[in-house]
Length: 287
Image 1 (cartoon, rainbow, N blue to C red):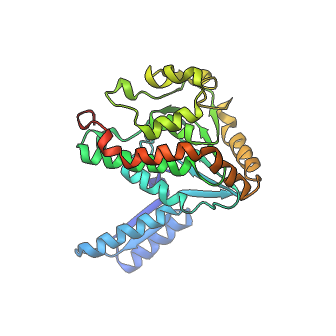
Image 2: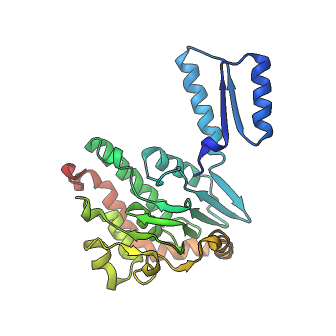
Image 3: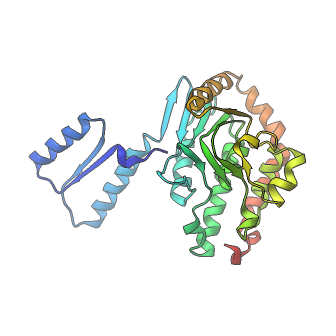
């Protein structure tokens, strides 16, 4: 997702003439503008906030030649917070499931560093709910009816690495980046849902090293274990990933979806069962 602050302007408390002038000025520069009179009515303020969020969500997804593009960009490490997970799910609702493909891209230097650690350490209930919703999001991407391409633009740690494992084709930018599952180095287990996704995608010869040994791979060494499929120069990443997504988007429907379901049937049962039991499996003291 893009850094919305670069594209939005909120004007509150200006009179009609001044507000209109400011709105026109910002709008002419391409900003999404939300003008409002000052109000002490909390219900009106909340409604304004909801309207702003809905307006901002419209720029979270881009369509190019039948490819739906979701760009992760929170301006930091692309942490999967409850809000980001919710927004990604809402964006996934907008992606056609009977044609084209989905491209998931990161920000320069960072694909994702995993779950939001502030929420993870806040209290066990908040952490469990975030983890469960995050795994449900990964399952949606893993089983998406159309091809999913990930453009790994930098580090992919923990949930970032499992997002790569949930994708059908992974292209990474060359650079000083790390990919891997570091849960066991942070006093956390790897629960069934993401363990099954990783086992489905990672090479059997690297399962011990990648999961139980919590090995972090350089991006150059991430093809052999199965985290990525292709490594290219960073300045070519977007174009190459888009071209791959366009190509995979031509695969027949519903034949692609039907074949994918057959291929994933057994593992999806294990993932879904693991998600249902997640609160009882995660050790509260480790969250």
